[in-house]
Structure formats: C-alpha cells, structure tokens
Image (cartoon, rainbow, N blue to C red; front, side, top):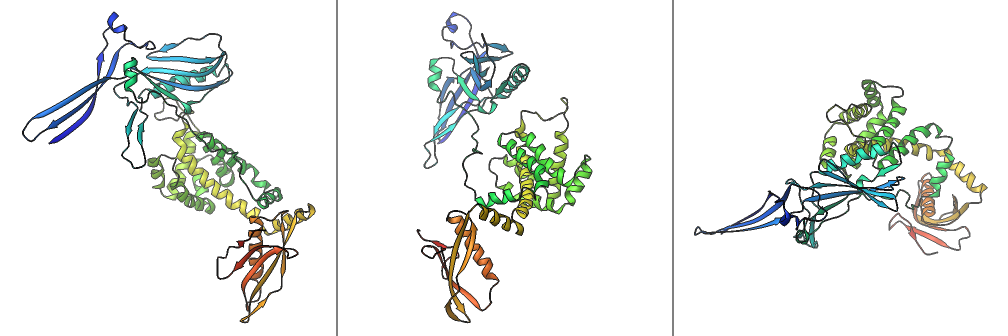
Length: 459
C-alpha cells in the first residue's frame, strides 16, 4: 500500500447576486475571488485499486494589519479610504488616534495560520502564525501616510508591533480557522533595569574624570550608538560607532581609500577586529546567513567592508537599485552589532588602562578617608618558614568601603596576595583568615588544601 497526501490552492469566482450576498461577511468590502484550499489523500494498493479523498475548505478573503499609533493627532471625524485594493482605516478613542490599519485580499501565495499537535516531546502544539505576501505593500502605504502627516502633527507608528488578523468570509469559515489574529512585537531588555555595580569601579570613574577628558567625545559616540541599537535604529547606530573610529584613527579623512589605510595601520583596530569574531559568532538574534557571510571575510576584508558601508550610507539616490530605506534599518543590524563589538573592545581596553592606573588607587583611598569610608580588615596567616610551620605576623589592609561584603573580601584577598607575592621566598602560606580589625569576627578562611577562593563564614 502506498499513501500520498497533499494540499492545493485554487481560486473561484464569486457569484454576484442576492443569493451570494446573503452569505457575505458583513465587514467584507472587497470583490473578486474567494480562495479555496483542497486537502487530498490518495491510497494505492498492490492490486491496482485506488482510493482518493478530497475535502475543500473556503479560506478567508481578507487579512488586516493593525499598527499602534502614538500621536498628538485628534480627529473630529474619520472613515475608511481605499487605495487600490488596500483599505486604510484609523482607530480613534475619544478623538485621539490610537491605531491605523490596512486590509487586503488573501492571495494564493499566502500561508494561513495553523495549529497542529507537536511531535516534539514536551511540546504540546506546533503553531504557525502564517504569512501574507501583501504585508510589505500595506507597510509601505502606512509609512507614506506617516511621513505626510508628520509634516503637520507628531505621529509615531509602531511598525514593529503589528497585529495581523485573518478575516473569514462567514461564520462557518471562522470556525474552521484555528487562529485568526495575533500580535507581533519586539521585546527589549530594560536598559534601566537595576544592576549592582561595585562602588570601587564607580569611584574610579569619578576619579578619572580629568585623566579621561580627552576620551569624552569618542565615548559619547559609543554611548549614542549603543542607545540607537537598543531602539532598533541601526543606521544611526552605525554612524555614531563609525565616528568613534574616525575620530581616533582617521580624523579629518573622507577618502575611503585613505580611511582604510589609516584604520588598518592601527594595531589596536586590527586586534579589535580579530577579537570581535568570537562574540559576534555567538550572537543569536542575527540573520545567520549574513552573519556567516561576514565571518567568512578576512579581518582586512571585514574592516574594508565596514568602511565601504559607511560610504554607501552617506549618500542616497531614489533610482539606485537596492538603495537603503531610512525606516528599514534591520538590513544593517549585523554590521551595527559587529561594529559595536569592535568599538567596545577598543574603548574597554583604553578605559581600563585609565581606571586602574596605579595613581588611581591613592586617589580612591584619599577620598574614602576624607569621607570616613575606610574599613580595616585584619589578616592572620600561618605558613612554613624554612619548612617549619609558624604563625606569621598579622597585617592590616585598608579598603575604601563602609561595609563588609563579598566585593570587599575579594579585594582584601587580592591585596594580600599581591602584597605577599613580594615577600621572602622561604615562606609558604598554608592558611589565612580575614577578620575584623579587633579580631573579634572572622569573615573568611582560606586553606591551601582547598579552593583559593575564600570560604565565607556567617558574621
């Protein structure tokens, strides 16, 4: 026995007249054809007999795309307007515009939403939200309206949060659809979500304000580029991030050839390009094909590509094939992320050199003493001196902090290691304790036989 099955799609003309109009969906304003999907199954037996089953289902004739609107626009009246086969309509609440929608007929090229049992263990359903071949046409019309009205009022259409809705021709067709509407949006991480940061690092940034003043403008470009990436403004992000490179390594140069030469001649840029490959390859929210294409380039080719892209973004011509669109910045998502990683690598290396310069330690301690924010930790150690176990002389370590926490103990741990590293070669530390200044409380104990990380005890 051989079993085959499939799905075919066809269109049938509507029969206009009283009988057909009686069953039309009240919201449908479009004339033309209704789409049908034919499910068929054919079974062939070895004795030559065949059995074929066919089932025809009429599909919805319309798909509606609704986009939220943030606007100062107030409408005293409104009604739908059709442009070609696109019906455009505003949603208004108490006079304020809240959304705009575009409705188009379904075509044979469209893929309807479906819900099916999943064969994957632990997953109950497989949901396909479908696809309309006309979404780009509706979005283009919406963006054009957006641009025209922005000349007169503040209008912001949230294109990334579109809600597609498949509208059946009648109630029977609605029952056959598993899904007829859903919302699509982009969920972003909150840049302002609380994040604990060591005050030691914050104080170092404060103390470095003068030493790093020459870096203020380049860091401003990086900060603005990072913010633009968060907002999905990849063209603006690319410009700001490239200005970082241009300011530091090719100041005043506009000829792409000279810019390439200057950037490739800078070792720090070469190193940053090479170091960006690993994190870039691990970025999951990118177009995998384009990401792999970029990673397939040599470091030199990659850098030259970034310079050429800056040149392409600097010019625009409506008649040029493939010209970039100001509202379709996703096309440059991958290059923006790659350039951000290159720039961040350069900035981090330079910033760390300033933040942790030897002189900064004294500045931090002095400011902490002036503010009464010094904590003294006593370190008692035992070890072998010429092979004989003895108690070593206690030492006190001052740290800029008003409280004892993990960060402070880690800092004391590092300071003790650094300080003892220059001690006598005939001394081998076996154990040490981090204690309060009066030795009344033990914060942590380290043993050579265990981990080199301090073992913290409740205080």
